[in-house]
Image 1: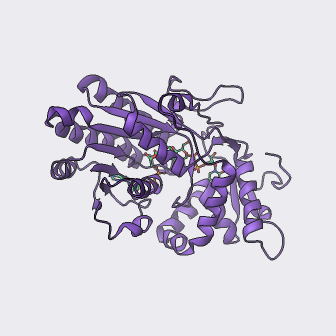
Image 2: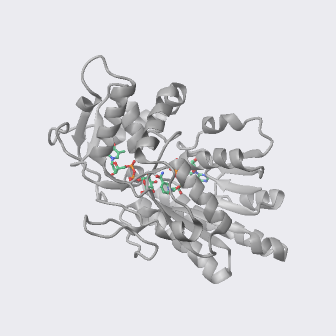
Image 3: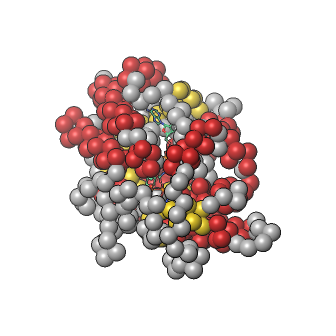
Length: 364
Ligand code: NAD
Ligand code: DAU
């Protein structure tokens, strides 16, 4: 079996679904079910004997230790984290607690379990840490994309907490010999994406006739990757990654936020036209994110060269699938837009609508 943390979140759930669609090997999904964890993402597995869900916190070392002893997984894939940059600006404490202390606690439980395994199982065991390109900080337009040797320079409480967790994982390999692997991936998008993040927020707000909030000038750049491509990269690294190595994962797909928002509006105009006008009419520029990183871009040559991975989806195909998924899953959308979500939207967006410039004419 493999032991997955955070498997009820966006990427974790896509990973668990993909894994069980391609392998007979079982999965234990250990997830605290924070606001971002959603068992509706995994409802299709409710009668699947290969799947076990346990609600719990990665900070609960005793519980993790008990589960590792009980199920004897051959690998841990660690997704669990607080993942939203804007939330880390409002309240960094949860990010330190889960991303740093939680990863530390998980590493300690893993180390205790791993060192008592029989030699052959000890040799094949893997701890795969899922991290982000944000640990590298921000790029100017002229800089080359982030490679595995780019110096860490995290700028937000979120990215700083992820960077700290990456360092702990690295240290457990160097000091204790724990067989670790780390992936640093760019922005994911696709089904089950919680609508606090740009792409699902734009799709759901557009359909609800609400403002489409673009921070600052909207010229920030992200490198977008369809989530199942990320899942495929994780499987490749787990299978054949070199111990102690980090692998950058990205879509070779740099887009300004304005361009992403325009493309989404155009797709919605095609797939679900409004009675009059375009979804672009709902775009509003609002106050920028404090410390907003200008550009992320990933150099994904190492994983391609060593492990033969490259993205299967283009932005065109991936975004079309994503919009179609949201159009077909109204129930999922209305369930996640609960009271808690509405409180977050108020906290983050209330009073920030200040059209700085007309958006619709802007070139990406
Ligand atoms: P998410 O916020 O959608 O899901 C996080 C999951 O972790 C949730 O199910 C939540 O309940 C669970 N969780 C949170 N705290 C926990 C704790 N203390 N104990 C156990 N479970 C806990 O996140 P995501 O977007 O799916 O990201 C997953 C991982 O991938 C994160 O580590 C993130 O840093 C990394 N990552 C995300 C992206 C992206 O674009 N979303 C890109 C690169 C890397
Ligand atoms: O790069 C990988 C990271 O990508 C992951 O590590 C994070 O977990 C994930 O949340 C994501 O971080 P970003 O901050 O890049 O994603 P987000 O969707 O929040 O924002 C994408 C861009 O869109 C960013 O430049 C901020 C901007 N934005 C976002 C929101 C929510 C807006 O302009 N308006 C918005 O309302």
